Length: 145
Image 1 (cartoon, rainbow, N blue to C red):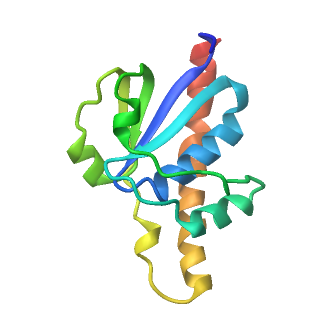
Image 2 (cartoon, rainbow, N blue to C red; image 1 turned 180 degrees about the horizontal axis):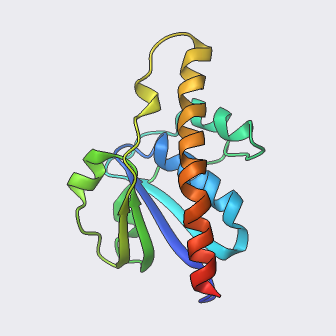
């Protein structure tokens, strides 16, 4: 990997919804300018609604897997971004991170209701992440130039 990539790690509790959405969106939007991964304090499975919400914006996330943060402890990261409060509390300092950010997002997987209501919660989180990622991507792109 070359040094012109910005390395970003998203952390959440289960690495099933918010962090997966963030990884998929930034990988798609950032292209070859970013090296992005996501992980959780616990390993579970990727929520099917996250896969569906990403598919709606042209991102095939069907092959994604849930990962545990210990897979990435030894790697250097330009940014480690927690997307849930419990991950921030569990990992207040991440070894190898140059900069840590926190984006507290509501967990869409806790939404109950019909299939459409549950998918709507994931769409909402996807939209919140798109709003957060636009200026973040502009900032990291400008600083890499």
